[in-house]
Length: 169
Image (cartoon, rainbow, N blue to C red; front, side, top):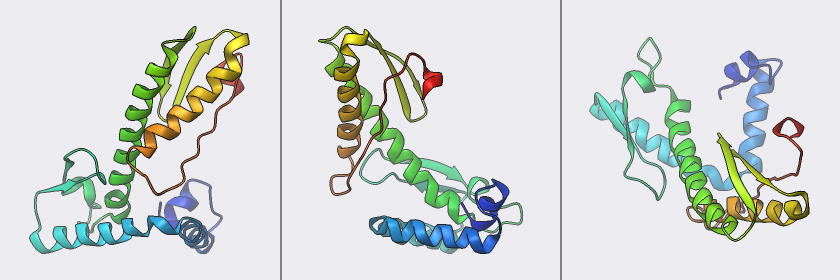
């Protein structure tokens, strides 16, 4: 998000604070800098060639997704850098989630546990109370292993908890 969007979404009080939050994010996650270079190359391609379609590729995964010029531009025609930046990140997260679900399903087959739902980046697994802690560890590790398929050098963490319903999260 831009500083302006952080303000609009109630995350920052003003644009200056929004800019500070963004700067702190990139200082906290310095390895994501490769995305900046990728974004710059994508924007240069759009500006120089002015294509009607721009292919956005997720790092190291599927062939890519085509975005229209309208999808990556504001109404005035200026490019939306955050859209160009976000597409590969979201695509990578989606690919990691799909890989994690394959791993998770295989690991749950031997247990009395069932994958009930997937909502964005969350999974709900139902099991008996006596298996809850074991299944919790399996879910957490499957999520990590799924993302590690695509991001080998970056530390991946996953949060998991046991509850009687999704509302307890």
